[in-house]
Image (cartoon, rainbow, N blue to C red; front, top):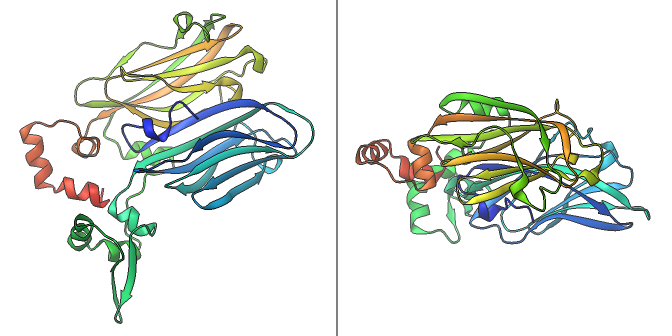
Length: 336
């Protein structure tokens, strides 16, 4: 399982980047990740990059549907180009690489992104978790098991009608530009470094190389890591990794094998907020000299919607504003 698993996400929605490689023996599958208990969140497999290897297949199983995704790797884009996907799961997600030949696929490289978010009432209706039936000639009404709170919010915001008309629910944008435009941005900062990375720093993290300064998040702000790129090591055996520490209690939140990146000019995206601090390091098994890594972070205002979603303490004036704007119900309903 990836270090940043659905259960560890804190500031949902979060889009986690995973970069792994492995030897895949003949006529077998490599289980890249396996999540069997996703609630109370949902997960979307939103993008991937793979080696163009003949007889390799990318397979994703979700909930009760086996191999919703079953792609020939050699018909996919090059490793440097991420492909958009949209595979939703709320109970089970299995991600595997299948080797359909007798030989070993050595150090097979795979990179993918997944989004974790909270259920809203609108999302539950759209996904059929909350049932809807036709009543009479024109009415759509709740059916099956609904809680009193779900019924109240549906009545208050006409959720069923808004969903069936195509107006709801709010969705986290896929495109990076759209993501950035929706934030109250203060500054976008890029860190680009060419560094030496000590041998043995994977086994002994005290030897790791810090990439840029520790980012301490100012009060009432958030920092979001949204882009990463690196050199490609000369060989997989060099074991060179980017490590992302998030806040003060989530070290190694993302642990990325740079062998799975294409090069410094092929960045990949993610969306990892932090409210306390963010610190990014590099580690290597055999060591590196003049190794290039760069990343981008967004500094943005911590909004009242963020505070409601993430259950962050608010000042009395902020609570009054949230009440005035009806943010509590709108967040749970899926209106914002």
